[in-house]
Image 1: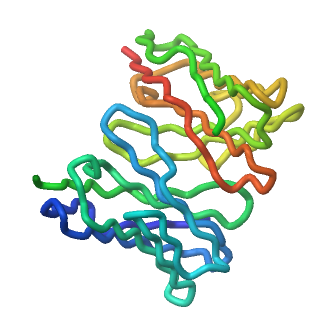
Image 2 (image 1 turned 60 degrees about the horizontal axis):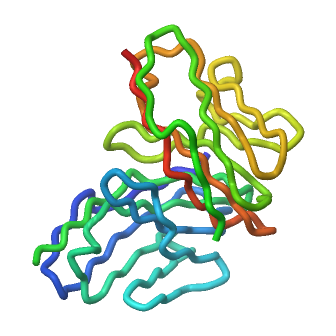
Image 3 (image 1 turned 135 degrees about the horizontal axis):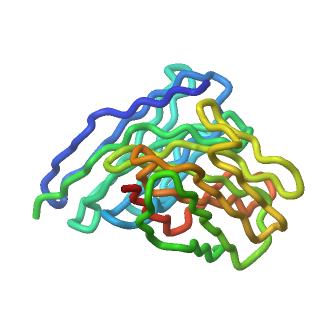
Amino acid sequence: GENVEQHPSTLSVQEGDSAVIKCTYSDSASNYFPWYKQELGKRPQLIIDIRSNVGEKKDQRIAVTLNKTAKHFSLHITETQPEDSAVYFCAASNGNNRLAFGKGNQVVVIP
Amino acid sequence: SAVISQKPSRDICQRGTSLTIQCQVDSQVTMMFWYRQQPGQSLTLIATANQGSEATYESGFVIDKFPISRPNLTFSTLTVSNMSPEDSSIYLCSVAPGLAGYEQYFGPGTRLTVT
């Protein structure tokens, strides 16, 4: 089955700086890659996603890039704010709608 | 987007008992899923709840332990049977409202503690 890995496990950034989280996946048939943000005690929230026919997608301060050859995709957060502090999960799906999640990254934005 | 609710929000149960968790959506959705999230851990898919047929379970999860029902396109239940402390976890349902079934949205979760 699909295996998704995330790096780094914890990321601390100064407010206003950029944060980048990278995920790798194992199944070359995977074609859908969402990112979820989970604040403490809350449900995971879908923040952005990308499909395999696109290399990059942006939504305001967040963007996701996909490298199918290398089988990795990354989340980019620019101009980080304290409310960006959360655990971020990447996931991958091979089109059967079943998501395989990475272990998560704790992002801490230091005011 | 779809409004998803779960009942109960939390419960404390004794080992050996069973708990049924409900997931309700305010609109018809194509697909519904059940996940488990152990404390401080990632999300693990338990099964896909299929409307009108038996659920599709992931490796490591069996119907006898986690029976699932989905009687219609807006409702599903997950039962955690014969519980042990290792079942203490957050259980979340998710829905994929789109026709392609890609984007998944999560319910608020049920925090289960087994003593």
